[in-house]
Length: 626
Image (spheres, rainbow, N blue to C red):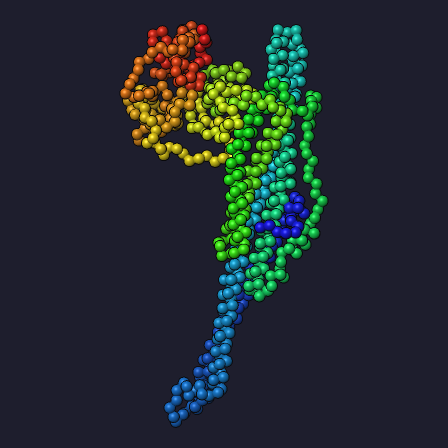
């Protein structure tokens, strides 16, 4: 669909609305011509009907006079129709009437041909191009909304940076007033924390400037010119189709309506001076002096390292998707060239729709990749080779209904409205706001460069006394569609026996009875819950401790662990289920051993054995090491 000579994208920057208006005028012209031919066909049919009426009357009159004219009113000899036709006047009259009948039928045929081969074809061309225009305008609106969203993120980052700068000044003044006060140490700590928050906001603001500038360049240098060229290609094909239809209907030459001259005429009369907006630069807060350099102090650097890992993870997931769409686009472009050379290969209009859709999808994903790479480049240029251990945590959203200590700031996460994150690999829990502040040194994590994808886990929800988790891994990309469910392979799932009756407290849980056999659909991911399916096909979550481990035919009694680790309860805790262990203040408990025992039992829960030999689980933040 490429054309030689001047192009709209090169010659008419940022004039999509005017080009779309020109396309509308072309469609309006087609509509007018279609109505013209439709009216002409109606006139042809009307003229044919009048000729047929006139011919019918002439035939009736001929019947009345032809006998008297040929043999007289009282002939003495027998006669027939052949005798009458021997009369030269009757013969000439008959030929005249038949000529009128044939002429009327010719006008009917012309009307039918105009309707089927011109009017309806123009209607189809008009409809398809209206749909193509609508698709292009929707794509233009999508480009605008994506650009404006990124612009808004920059403004939002600037606003947050200014607010943090004002907070820094406020905390500094409090620290000065508290120098001789007993709260001086706490004020100094709060001031330092606020300064780190300000530096993180500054870095986010500087990165948003880089991303916004790249988005602006992408919009004006690539996205808009490509969209305008697509409009031009659609317009060129529209004019060519229109010319062929007119040539077919009126035997006109295609060169009389060639599109190149029209395109050049429009470009020459619509060239306007255009200068792309200037790049954004760093604007310091009026209440706080600062430079335009990204802060690489210890605390902000960790946030940058985590953002860098996240960018690279998304780029790794996006790259194969882009490669696949690029190949699809090349295949459709090659197929279009073949269809242009030989129209008998298939419907070219449908192919054009698929080609435009593929171009739009590829352009959006390529734009996403460019923005990710611009963010990656901005961070890499700031921190250099100091990228940290690059073993990121695999966080999932969590709701904590018991006091849980944040692994970063060491304060408590508690309350159904206090959302946090829990690492699926090592079990560390943090506030949502602390997710990017904790170093990427997960003990169970792998180096990010060796990880190509992160699979999304199942949803885990529990209302009540334990932790409620829903798998939303922070590294999972939103660009790649999820695969089909694996629940169709139930026959291959392992079976376990239920040890205790369990009654569900939410829609995500499954009711099971003691002694029942169930399929393990998803194993315990560290949350203390297992997704199972019963024999009726229903599935849901049950506590992991309610299921028999190992061989269902061999049940081992509770024995003391080999970990030799003991803990002492610092708070009293009352068991809320048969799998839990009650604690008294000061009570000593020995932790069990094994990959799923002791500290490895689940997020926020440990397993141990009390002095009576009873085995159970209890909240980990209710005890301390001896």
